[in-house]
Structure formats: C-alpha cells, structure tokens
Length: 377
Image (cartoon, rainbow, N blue to C red):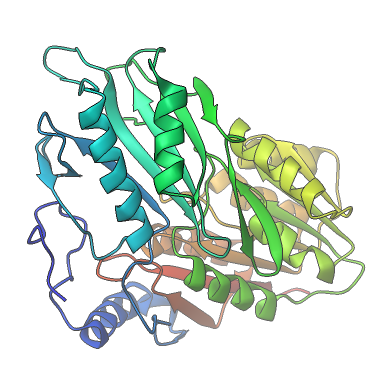
C-alpha cells in the first residue's frame, strides 16, 4: 500500500517498508538499547493487519476546506483523502464534515491574522462498539447553527454519537483546552476493552491501537505475580484501564492519575463496571508515592505506565521503601525506560525479560513491558 502524501507529514517513517522488515529493524534497534542488561529480548509482537489501527486523529483544514496533517516541522497542511493508519469510518466522517463546513461557510482559523473559527477537528473511535466522537476545536465560543449542523452530520454518519465544541483561543501548539461545550450527545463515547466498558471523552488518555492494547494488557496479567490478598498500585493510571483489568485478580487496587479529566473518567469507569475493589486518587504519581511512604502503607505490587519522559528518581526511591514484591513497568519509550531500569537495579530490583509490542506500525515507536522482581523477597 502506498502513502498518499509520500511521508510529508513525518509520522510514518517506515510506511514504504514491508511490515516484516519493519519489525525486524525495530527489533534489532531495541535489542541494542537493552544490551547492557544481558536479558532476553522477545521478538516484537506485530499485527496481522497493520493498517487502519488509529482510533484517534487530529486534522486541520485549509481555506479550500481540504483537511490534512501538518507537514513535518511546519504549519503547512498536507491535504489527504485517506491516511493508511485511519479506518474508513474516520474518513467518511471527515468527508462529511468537509462538505458541511463548506456549505455553512465556516471560517478557517488563520494563525498569522489570528482570525477565523475552526482550528482543528479531533475524531475518536470506539472500535468495539463502532461509536464516533467528533470534537470541533474553535477560536470562539459561538457556533451558529450548531443544532442543524449536528443533525445533518449524524443523519449521514450514524456512528457519530456525540459532538463537542472545544474552545481554544490560545496561541499555542496544544490542540485542546479545558473549555468544552457539548453540542450533541453525552460528550463521550463508550468502548469495550478486555471485557470491560470505558467512557472516552475528548481529553481521555486511551491507547490508540485497540487490538494491540488488548495483547499488551494480557501480557501484564500473565506477568502478575499475584496473591488474592494483594494490594496493587496502578500509577500513571489514565482512565483506569490497566488497574481495572487486573482488579479481579487481587484484593485491592489503588489508581493514581494527575490529569483531572482522566481521573474523573477513571471514577466513572469504575462505577460503570461495578468494580468495588478499586479506588482512584487525583495526584502526581511521585508525590503520591511519597505520601504512601510517610503513611507506611503496605504495597504488594506496582504497575507503572509513565509518560514518554519516564518516571523520576524520587518515585523509584519510594518503591525502595515501600518494598513491593514486584513492579510491572509498561513504557511507550524504551530509551527512557532503560534509564529508570538502571535506577531500579541500584535499589535491588532485577528483570530477566523484555517484551515488545508494535503499538504504532510504520513508525519508529515500540511499547515495552518489563517485570521487575525484588531480589530480597
């Protein structure tokens, strides 16, 4: 399959390479990253069909009402009709939006003149339930004719269950603001993952590759060294996905998330799935760990899935004091994970294996899982 924009957006570094060669290339690269540990690196778990996997897309429109992605290192829009990473429904919705914007003469935001209404469109897809969330990112709080606009959109695209207006007048590269208004539906969509149900809003952190995410979480479950009476900390927990998936295997799960919107989603997801042995806290993961140390809390296991920058030395040193039997470290950037693993070694935690998952086919990125065990326990 050929990329329409010839890699100009900069997102898919390997799009013109055969998929098996992509996996082998990334495997060799990541073997080298972990070489100092002398551990087993398992082959990357790839996809049967590595296309159309992204359940989230952000596009911009130009004055001709063409939608597309930004060219790498620029603000120039590369118009597209189809991206190989997005499913057909995403493009059907975008094409319908394109017609409606043109029909309603919606003004496109000009960053130089700082005028215009529409800045971006965010599409989120719930793969299992075939639901779509449309987020219109605008420069002003008013969207005239929104009721008719939503009606026309949903008539032609019945998978669209909610339309949200996100008002972002700031001059920044950050796409979304916290100021939102629901134009249609409930402001979220619902997806099913690992047998559980999750609400996904505009701000939610949710893995963009549904099928690979289920494989990743299954590996977390397989690696769990659990006893039924265990208490597990799920740190950097997002909307609570991993903690909720493992909750049925242990006595108690504590989820910690700094982002307030994700924390609210986690609370709602716990209630929606009727999970009574999980409790969520809105706090910084490192600060929460320090509080657990001060309270002398008992923790049997820790699951951590930090942002791309990795964790902190303070977080790792808090683990040394809490002294859990094991830590499962899920990473979206093995380069920063390696730095943290060296700190874990200093406090007496070791690992034997690294498991790699191709969450983002055609890109340089790989997700990794490591089980760290306390050598003294």
